[in-house]
Length: 378
Image (cartoon, rainbow, N blue to C red; front, side, top):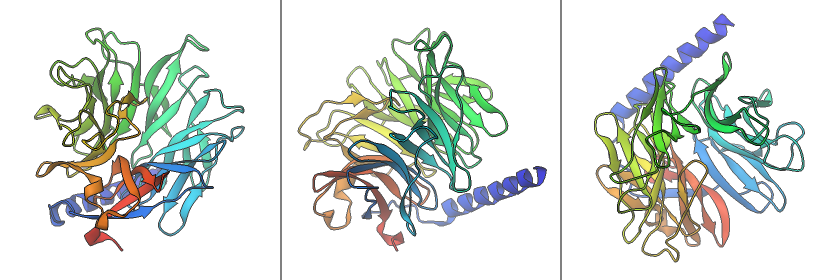
């Protein structure tokens, strides 16, 4: 066991060094165009991608007429059905994958599906492992995983059943599931993302909150990241390895705007696409490139709803990328030759090399996609 742990530590150190070298040696300019890969579906129906790793492996969920199953997509093998936890069968979703091809997500565990889910860790050798709960047999789900296999998500604590309070958790193989608590005076929290150094982000209510505030958690506890000026609700959704945090916040003048938070500058409003009135950011890579979804002047409906992770969502949204140099741009304008038939609706993840995953409509059907910067496309 100690030898295995030492090997993992060495591999992690090598990965960190390679990451730093890649950042130092690769070009600084963001790709002007992307080539799109349609990831398809498991058995017809629809698919959505939620995460990817530095190797370009993608995870998400694909839905048929009566079920939705988590998938792992690779360039060599295409889309693989990851199944469900034992006793399940109708529902699973994969939300994160690390460079060791360990996948985190949520699955039902008894049929019929009545809202009872468990967080899982999937590996090619062991399949799905049930991560347990914080004490209640209610909804438990995983939202992120880092290189070391640490997983974050949300579970429920007593009193239960049915009355448990949502709590952010951090799970590891050695320590199991840890309740991360709440901001001061709070009663609920949700964990959405984790980086290589174990920093966790999400949102929580608190004694001074009208609704909820985003947080970043370390072993020292939770730090309240506040809101945009005049805001009452905000949620942190993604974090990179240098501690930059993205998410969405309302403000005195907006119902939802994407934000980028750094320790040095605090929370920054990333605005919207031209003609739009809302946006939400889902991920940020180590270069500070941010992706998400937003409405635009071409949207037929400017309304939105809040998702469970705190982000905004709409059937008429457009996927975007934001950079310091160029601001927010519609990814539909950056696809090679515009790929007739595609409307990219949401960008959910971006890796070190600028590859982006999410979903959109292709000839009227919802499909997961992988965007690859054209110079690096093979």
